[in-house]
Image (tube, rainbow, N blue to C red; front, side, top):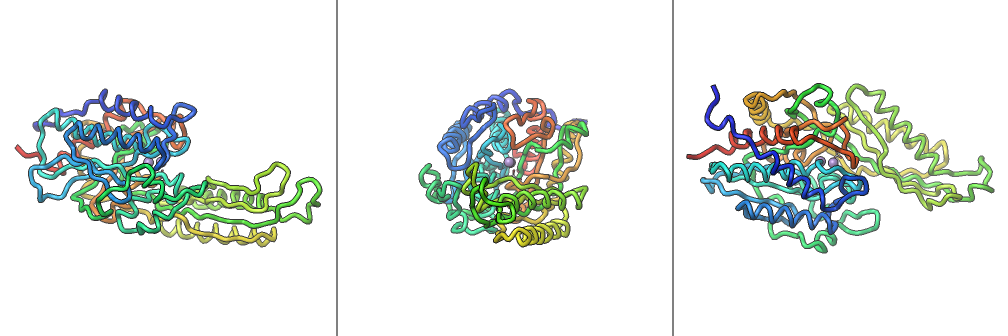
Length: 416
Ligand code: HGY
Ligand code: MN
Ligand code: MN
């Protein structure tokens, strides 16, 4: 027997329109987005989000890391808020839904509550976390990591991009240094709704992912130092080729991940070759290894194996080798009580669902250290993400937002 409100649904067309409107800001070259953190495009997207939130009656707060918090008042000002957050920044060749779906679905929950005249005991706070992607300024989940007390604000603001721009200066340049002390806010709960960014839900024909865990991650930045020399006149036995070293280590990273199947991954994503000239043997290569697993022991073993392999290759080729961890978080278990609420919402709505472990990292992984946190996922086409062709259907987007709506209503408590 349906209880009052069980038939409430968000406004699917309004959510989709907002996603398409936001996607016009910081367009990519192939239909996706390039709205990297603390660029003018990121700032333009933030202003649009602020306008939408204020039009929905929310009060916007911003902290010293640029994290944005749009508050819809509850009936009990003493009650800690329920947060609904994700990120508006994208990869350089990002999709239109990674992160954005979670922020705008949070706004849609507020808009739907306004439409239905729903009042909640706990306030709601729709959140945009600064620099989730870590593409421009490593590591990923930078501002949520500072909020959770894992990273210091000083470390974060000193991070530089490949052009040498400094995070703290860019945050000031775009005008998003807020008044609030980062991390001062306390939470009753936090929800993050996100596309899966993997193929499981679509392959299994499930509409909802109930995210029980997030896998852990290491980002290791490896610097190989050889000798730049002429590619034509330098005999092979006299070369000290940093590019060859990077290639061999890239292959070893792949082999190490494959040796830890079924749930380990590894790749090299970012490579800076110098002098990066067609007819010069690379004298120096700086590259980032990304390894992940939901199992702590496996993750730590892979890190040790990658470091051993890198030093062995460097020794073989006579290269200098320095390894710096530039990103890390352990596998995370989300709040079992909230996982149950999300699963119950999917069941109440009659949506097919399955428990899933998040392959990607998310702000929720850090926030779970300071508040009960859970994630909800919707499928994405071919599991493709961090690619401009990233795609979801309006139906998938709406069904996940309906689960978010019902889970938030249950957690925030409806009054009157
Ligand atoms: O790297 C990640 O997993 C996230 O997309 N930033
Ligand atoms: Mn994301
Ligand atoms: Mn991402």
